[in-house]
Amino acid sequence: MGEVWRALDETLGRTVAVKLLLPHDSDPTATSRFRLEAQTAGRLNHPHVVGVYDFGEYDGRLFLVMELVAGDSLARRLGTAGPLPVEQVARIAAQAAAGLAAAHQQGIVHRDIKPANLLLDADGTLKIGDFGIARFVDDPSGALTTTGQIVGTSLYLAPERALGQPAGPASDVYALGCLLYQLLTGRPPFQAGTAVAILHQHLDASPVPPRQDRPELPPAFESFLLGLLAKRPEDRPTAPQIAEWFGGRAWQGRSEPLPEPEPAPVAAATYTLPSAVVRPSRARTTPARRPGVRGLVATVAGVLVFLAAMLAGMLWFAPGDSSAGTPGSGAPATSGGATPPPAPGTSGDSGTNLSDTPGPSGPSSTEDGKKGKDGQDKGRDEDEEERDEEG
Image 1 (cartoon, one colour):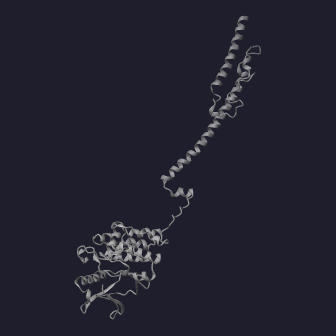
Image 2 (tube, one colour):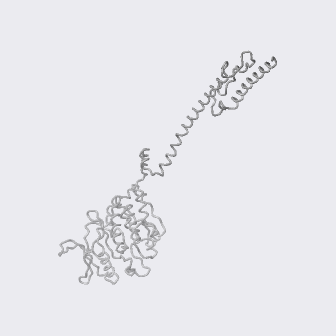
Image 3 (cartoon, helix red, strand yellow):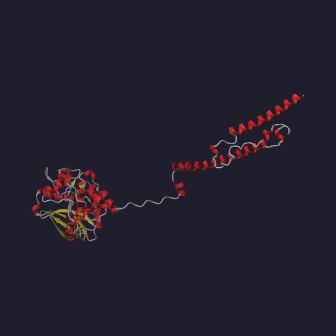
């Protein structure tokens, strides 16, 4: 709508762009849209939005004085160079989203994001222009459309707008997704012979994953881009989120997970882990030492008891021991001098586990000792009977 001229602002001494409303576009609707563009763009002061300096009328024609962008539109760039490098598309995405975020913050929806309305200057800085069909979110009457009329370009029209619903910030995000898709693949995500058929695809079809045309595209980039093309407005990211994501170079992503860190030394883990984690480790290590000590003590004690029992048995049954109280040589108490049976554990079965066999104080040792004493007592009784008979 209108024609653009390069001009010189003689007062400020700078080169500007002057947009004139064409004579055949001077109907009330076109005039209102032209004024709306001046009002919306004039409220924005952002490095990625074409600045508006002045607005007026000359010789019955409305004019708009704007910032001059010395460069090409993305539409012309696509026509001459084809798909753009991934790095450049990511940079364009960050800048365009930042410009849209500024507009949305002011309550302005562009409603016509497409390659022809995005300009690149000589330094590669992007500028959003042509707010001619923009609307204020809080002023539905500013849409300047009749009931049921859809404004915009069908190739970049969000599904909710194809259903006749009002445009919102998410509609601009969807259009930006279509534009980025085209910058990567050289074609819009949906194409058909008629505008109505294209609208049906926006509503029902899924776009071909762009990596089929650009295998070098990072998976993270593709996934995020397809999120911009979500059918439901609430499923799309906001313009500030898009600007932050691309500006932070998150699109580069990683096709492989990061390697896991090496395990920290035990000493370092003792100092860094919380007490709730350290306590179980002590509980595991402390009992591990106790069974060894207890086993050693039990073994030593068993050996000492066994040796003491053997020594006691040898002293008890030793022949000719005066402390045994045996009779003289004529007494038949020869059983006291008999060799005692080997105590349990003294046989050749030295490999028997001490814990599995009765110790020296077991029943067998007690019975043998008892038998020996009974034999001695019986011998003394017989001697006394003989002396009584002689007497």
